[in-house]
Length: 461
Image (cartoon, rainbow, N blue to C red; front, side):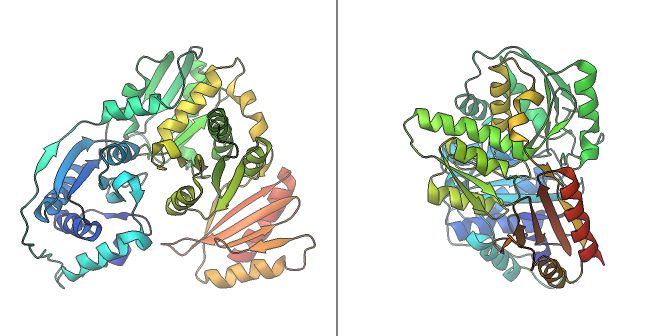
């Protein structure tokens, strides 16, 4: 029997098709989603993976069978689905496995207004309901409800999505920019042409053909190997910058004019500064900005320098969005290149972050590397994964090693964080794999390397 606990992750549904799930399970997830969230109507979209259209349609039919009217928006990016959920005020389902390889697919679910659905906000109940309908031989039987089936209709949300984003960033007077965009054969190839149309941009597209088999490279810009083509093209063409989107185009990574990656923490600080200024201009005296605990110290420093309040939270979009809702924050950023905006229903959108970068660069004459200098104050290790069977024992070993170091603070908000005047580290366990994830930041490269190597030696011993 399929183990749905392996399929249903902390924030979404994700697994190999058809080994872990198929259309019959997708139908059941559609029915369970409607019943758990009490939806009378839902919006459904999908990415370019070969399995996405049939899985998406099965989900829609399951939702309709449970009485909900279904609006199918077809091919879309994840943040385009969030736009549809927010603008239509409907719960939504996005079929994508984001940056995962071609054999994977998944579902990102949200309530009306793009409010996230995770294990603590309905996903566990949805899984348990689907489990109750699944027999030992993996056949799925969804009990019928005494309701009138909902209808299926089609809608196009791309133009509205583009107009909404362009209404949030002033790009009217930017200087002409040459920009290379690597869509990785993902949904950036669908959204970028419409959003960028009419802007003073010389667009050089790379891998815009929608192809869920990812023939050029995986659509995972977190892996430096997947940025090599973009970096080379930026230098070759003399472009002002490069942008790389992941498979479902909800994350955006930035390359400067030298072909060097710009830290997502630096982009978080840059966009935060612009959102703070925008809020203050509208009369908001002390805006709040959310950042997760593995972003650079630069982020809270910049936020405070600009007269705003930084709030630190755990890693993960559900924590960011919850904190944004509670504090009314204007913006939130994660070091994984997820960027959240109050004016985008607190949802994450890499496209809006990209527009902010273009506006910041285009409204002044310096190159991007100079523009981001003030946001690169420290040396980062990047996230390093280690396979560790006994994660707790390894974490305790690290805590004990630094226990007697003077002027040190320790917290366990998300894993183990140790902070000193000149460096900090965070060590946290994966939710789904036997991995420990290490991030280190220090005042200089030598200190960072020393701390990084010491911790890796301890946990890998």
